[in-house]
Length: 135
Length: 348
Image 1 (cartoon, chains in turn cyan, purple):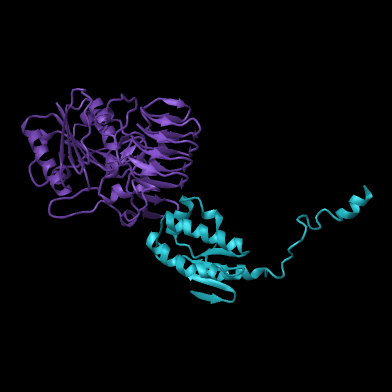
Image 2: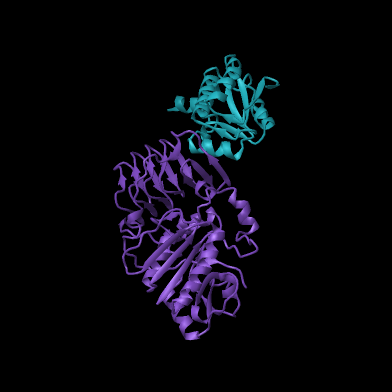
């Protein structure tokens, strides 16, 4: 495990099968249970992921999102990419070519600064309040 | 009387082993799916319902060859359709195959066979055998060798009069002693060096670039379905596509873009198969997305990324546990195209 500011980088094992999942999840779970967890899974050593591995990744993503955080994947090997695509979950995760890029993506818009209640339409339609009053 | 000697396996001459694969092809071998890892020649893999070997045997029978000897690494016995040709299968190693082929040629000479075709089966070529035999008769040379169209590179197919051959060495040396007449095949050629070529052959068959076609009727334009195939009403098959004998496609599946699913495969609920070849007796689990791949049992070769994987989880993909033994109906369907398949060769 490696910490880069508030972001935690976890190295995924080469084989993420049922046995590997148990060990890995034991390490990962405490990190997810904090407020706004920001986790990068470094997949540069992954050669095989089975259904249990994919399920664990989805579970961790779900838990992280529940706590207003995120789980991102970095340095995916071709094997990992093929398996995630095969199981139709590749599009669920944000992926980056390196762990550094993934860390930077967390820092790009600090959650504290990002407007939480900004209207979805922004200013693109002009002053909608004035328009409403005029009508 | 006409005879044919079909050798399945790499070219191995007496005294020296000359690999038939290029360096590039050798590198590609590491990307091969299971059947190739098990050293099954690609000519023996089912493509659009039948292997290249089956199609070759049928072409030889159609060309009036009386006796066909298939020698080498043949994983199953191709069936004879009862056309009158005698079919002899000898399963053996590549080294042994060439020795036996030499014996067979010499035996043909002793028994007064008029003409012998010698073929090392390694590629798919659309070749009109009747024309090739006619060419040999007209030119009157001891040996005629077929050449690839366009590039005019030699193919491992010779036509010879055994009675005019001289003794000495192995079959390839004997055939190489005399300057052959050059018969340039007119048509499509695919060297089948690696699994990418197998996929290319399927796409070329679907897009009419070669004579390879499924030998079953189209249920609608561009969609071929073989006997015993079951496709759920909610599944969608987008042309061109081939669904092989005894295949089961479950609900909500999508089969699209030049996909061929060979005999006795099962595609489970909601799986999408796009631009892929699923080799016979393969189970694809539910909710998968398979694209640009060749799948053989629990082996998956992704052609886009160049990755071969063995999937250990049988719920995802696996060898079908109860494949049907249906090899006996391999040659039962009459074909209407004139193609032959011969191997690329080396200039003597």
